[in-house]
Image: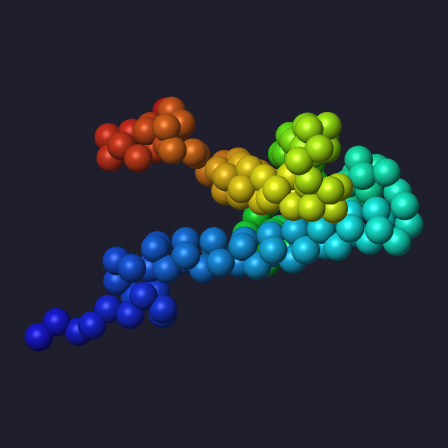
Length: 165
């Protein structure tokens, strides 16, 4: 009789799947904490300090960015490669996600469909999705690791490929 394969300890063919599931779980936890920081900050600035919604959203983005990068770099992806390179890439992805977030928030406010604190909820919800996808395939990829579809991945995976003398 064949022994059972335990996906938790990484034995057998389940290991890559288990690792991926745990990474997604860590990403989700960090993302939820960062989103909570974002939501609390924007709400508190609007409600308690009377800050304009778009300015409050920018301040909230900065706070959430700090939490998110630190958590993903150190915990989710276990500090892969250069922190400076990862920070620049993460900043690019985060600014792009923030711009989309801001356009969506401005649209929701302009249309008057929701109050400013409520409109921030769907606007901020976009950021974790965009950030996960880009972080997984680009931001935190260790240096030298080829991506799927990358020519280097095809060349390196071939058993016939040999380095030139």
